[in-house]
Image (cartoon, rainbow, N blue to C red):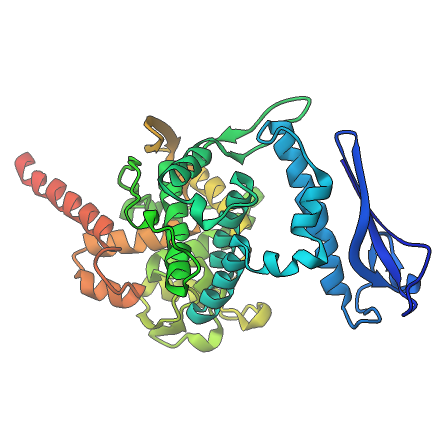
Amino acid sequence: MAVNFYLDKRPNKNGDHPIRVSISINGNRYVTSTGFSVNAEKWHNGKVKNGTTNAKGETSKTINARLKEIDSFFSREETLLKLGDVQEIDIKTLFAENFAKKKKEKIEISFFGYFDEFTAEMGKKNNWTKAVYEKFNALKNHLIAFKSNIKFSDLNEKGLNNFVDYLHTVVVAGKKTKERDTRVFGMKNTTIKKQLGFLKWFLRWATAKGYNKETTYQTFKPKLTTPDKKVVFLDWDELMAVYNFNIPESKKYLERVRDVFCFCSFTSLRYSDVANLKRSDVFASYISITTIKTADSLTIELNDYSKAILKKYEKDVFPNNSALPVISNQRMNEYLKELGELCGLDEPVTITYYKGNQRYDEVYPKYALIGTHTARRTFISNALMLGIPPQTVMKWTGHSDYKAMKPYIDIADRAKAESMKMFNKK
């Protein structure tokens, strides 16, 4: 496929040249105007130079965004053609329906126009984080791939079931090359449930606004078997093994990663909060923070272990007056697995999940499942197993209800039952 943008040789009455587009797919070619124009001096390499405007006052950002949208749209259509999801492509009709100026009003009130309105309104109202925006953008992309011209009326019983079937077969990772095919098909049931939850949130909003009249989603509950979530954490002995591990000279880059991880394991901090922890948040016997994820104001008392880690770095200077040497989340996750392997955290852990009706059991060494969030789980699990009341733990973690704490309470109860068996050995 080829989508090429170029200027018409003849300028209009304002001195701007119409921006034209040539679209070629599967041997068919269509040339038309994009509806925008610009001075030739402001055009370079198929787009408008940044920071410029045309005679109508339309900015380079607006124009280039539309050009990119046209390119992406027809790239997606060609992919659907190759996959067999569509049998033929009428370039002229598709362009007229989606990009012609006279169709602008229709585009603004399309399904995805409402979806964008929803994310803008709810994002502002609920102060969404970047991660939440990314989740809804992923849902939007799945809906586009499922049916690019979808309407609310399509999401009836049949349409919703078809969307679930699509999620069961969509490529979720990897890619196909001439050398090999590493694609992984199909979302796990747990992921599909989350996608449906996001979709229903949007549909409830659209219904309340009067945009959507199809209400099947309210009772749509497909059977998606999901196991209880496996809580991976380090018990006290494992945590102490990591805390006291003598890191070899060749692996000294793991020392700071270990210290930050252990600090979170002794304080319950999420990665985002320890990365944002300033020296001004640290006091003699506690830290005081406002969490990034939930904006909760928390006071967390320091124990001997967390104090020792802070003292170790008290004379070091880090960017943004940070209290600890925190690296990127991605790199830290990679290093934690390497650290866990060095520390011998290789106990086999079985992870069970379902895709449709198919059950999968995958066994991993524990270190392969360790990440930054393992530290928070480690704190909660050990605190409860040490006998600290859940309501006290919740004051440190910022949990507002017992639902999120239940998996950890179950772990503590199992540990309690195992401890009682010690009497049988006496």
